[in-house]
Image 1: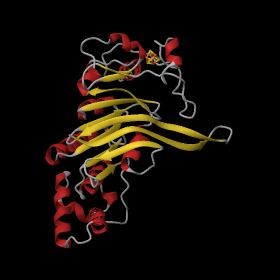
Image 2: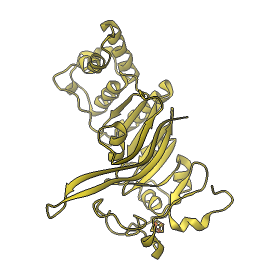
Image 3: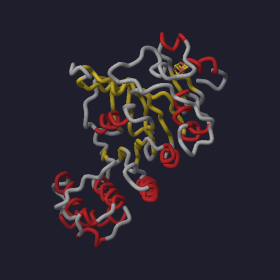
Image 4: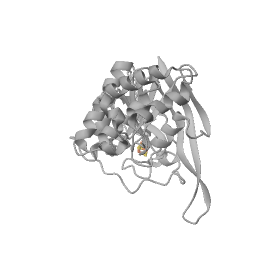
Length: 308
Ligand code: SF4
């Protein structure tokens, strides 16, 4: 059962171009996906592909231009964890953690609030004695644990994680990723996770969407994306990962500006397989299983009895 549904969402900003003229930035361009309760759904793509804008739109931090974002139950609580935890340096951890309860659970007795604080600090692998400390007394990984504890204190149903480990040392990254997996298992927490690190994505995710210029170009179970990659962009992205055994697929040129989206397939300016139809028409999703699709004209001809 889906806890989150995103339907044909567009997000646009207005920004100045190089000549100082105001222009629309097409950050998210018709994205649809759904996420099941207890699932870890990840969105991967280069910097500038629109994944952070999409996550912020889901969090309600920015407006969508059109489309629909709906949750199972109107009060499904969402919390977000960011790349760099922002913890007030003048507050003890106890006060940082209790603050959301004071603001959002007005009738809750103080004793219950303190019990909740103690419960979450232990869940993220820190101890009661840490509650009396200040943020500067912690390492980067511990600060991220505290920011996860702060996100969990309101018992959210969905956690949105925006590059939560990319500012951490590799050795610490694994601890935070394992913590998120443990929390998913313990609380049946649903996690929408974004990262540019494909090793992290592969390890943590149940399903993966690959984004390019504000569109999902391929989506599937983690195994389908990494072991049966279909889209030319996904192949290039995955082959650029140092631990990939796949033959390297070069990307031509730079990522186009989201102010000037290419006509037809948005990947056509960088795709080594592009042909005239790619400039004339935008491709539709081609399905390979009920969970796996990719958006590419080349794949149209691959339709067979397995296709939907
Ligand atoms: Fe490349 Fe054309 Fe497929 Fe786009 S539709 S990914 S340009 S082959």
